[in-house]
Amino acid sequence: MKRLKYILHRLLWSVFVLFGLSILIFCIARVIPGDAATMALGTRATEEAKELYREQNHLNEPIPVQYVYWLKSAVQGDFGQSTQTRRAVSSDVAEFLPATLELILFAAILEIVGGLLLGVLCARYAGSWFDNLIRVVSYVGISVPAFVWAILFMLTFSFLIPILPTIGRISAGITVPPVTGFLLIDSLIAGNFQAFGDVLKHLIMPGTALALAGIAQSARITRGSMLENVEKDYVGSEIASGMPLRRVYARYILRPAASPTVAIIALDIAAMLGNAFLVEVIYSYPGISKYGINAILNKDLNAIVAVVLVIGVTFLIVNILVDIISSVLDPRIRA
Amino acid sequence: MEDRNGNVEAEERRKKRQARTENLKRKWYQFSRNKMSVVGLVIVVLIILAAVFQSLIAPYPQHAKEYVDFANANKAPCAQFLLGTDAYGRDVLSRIIFSFRNALMMGLGVLCVAVPVGVIMGLIAGYYKDKIGSTVIMRVVDIFLSLPSLVLALAVAALLEPNLFHSMMALTFSWWAWYARLVYGKASSIRKEYYIQSAELIGAGRFHILFREVLPNCFSTILTKMTLDMGVVILMGASLSFVGLGEQPPNPALGTMISDGYKTLPENWWLTLFPALAIMLIVLAFNLLGDGISDMMSSGEG
Image 1 (cartoon, rainbow over the protein chains, first blue to last red):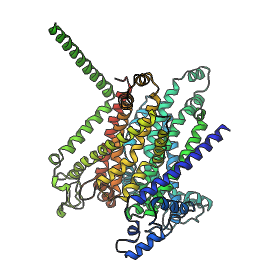
Image 2: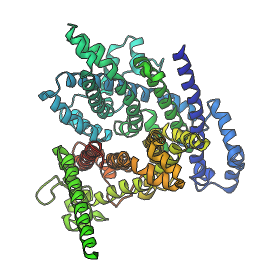
Image 3: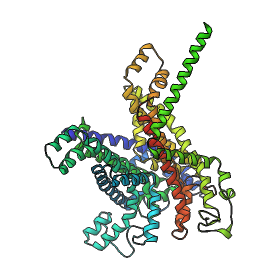
Image 4: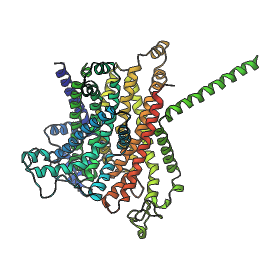
């Protein structure tokens, strides 16, 4: 009951933040760039055409009124037309978002599995050569931006030892019937394991490039908080009472240590969402971030606003999920 | 009598000086206990020196601007051009050295604006925690932090004319909120301490309490975050210039060099690899330095 109340409270709060975020983005998009009509129609458009555009898009009204108009259609999923693809922004987003979500999810899973595993091993064998090696490696991992990893991987695994595909999401010639938009799931539904393997191969390099910094960071944090717990009295008494070491580690050392790791993962996913903008460009991965970069370079206002908003929503959802997971892991948080 | 007084004063001054040097020595010990922090410090100093004396150090200073030498275009690393040359025949090493100044300026410029703004917001919101103003400030902070900083910076930079100054503005815009939240936490936790209560009782002004009582107690937290952030801001700056939203060509920027270079992979690998390593080196150095400073601050205040 208490947990439900906590989750409900978080949800209400997110709606408020989302509302604020939409105001912030709207203000950025309408106040900074100057004349929106010129940007949409180009500098060579006639004055009449621009005036018509302003009239149609309520650009002559004061900003707060414009916001209400914009919000009304945004709630209905209408973000206007994209000037680069000449299609509705919402259908562009629907097409490109699943690819990015798939990539981020893949990277997040890599981070959780890799980070926890390395952290546990380092804590278990603290002070050994393995621990020291991982410490040095994780230092480098944190210091190198994802797009540099992306390029280094590309050099190594596509050119030096060509074992992984360089660009895109799926090889040309392989198709899967779209159901969810997540190609991994779609190919499983279709029972096409060749496609599944192909998609997975395309995900390995961008996913690892995005996840590496997070793996290093969460490994370090897991190791640190596990070592703190090792010194606790109750751990000593469990070991003394003859409980198997493996069980002590799993239940009394790892579980309380996991919640700081989970908290850091929320921040890392934020970083991934940002870094995806560069990594997707490097690998020509057809996701929403690559779409967003094209929108940015072409000053496609409607698309920029929609992409930023969608990423904000994604990040909010991630935050809520992480809060729920940490409240399950560590009941003290709900107090 | 006067003479003796003078002696006592001199004695006290001497003692104070001695205490200060001892304190410095202890700080240095705490900092240098981890050898990696010293390595970080040395690299940071070298990078700053390279940025200051760029035209003396760089082998071909004229290559940092518009310069064309097609005879030497796309040369692999050799004795004449240690890190090779780009498509215009410009020395990559020289261009990397010339990009350090902008990278450092980027970090300093962003932090110099974002930190004071964020700190003042956080101080006010933290100290007046029960007031409505505090709630308003922190809700706005929450909204700013609900977007990944790189995404917010990209969105702002996208709508401005692309240049170094605007990319700094965009990063500042998305950076201050982190400091507001950091200082808010610290300030709201110490606002009921005895020394603050006694300052209030004596009748100290708001400015005195905020800046002379609360702020100094947040210093170590802020400074630690700042050194760690230098690397992150430089990295974000490189990310912005990678997509073409930073310093414009022909001026050298690490991000632009990488984005130009990776299109010619795998043949001209040196165009990408060396600027990438340069970014790696800068960020790593600032991270090591930041860890050292945090060691120095955390073990024993003062």
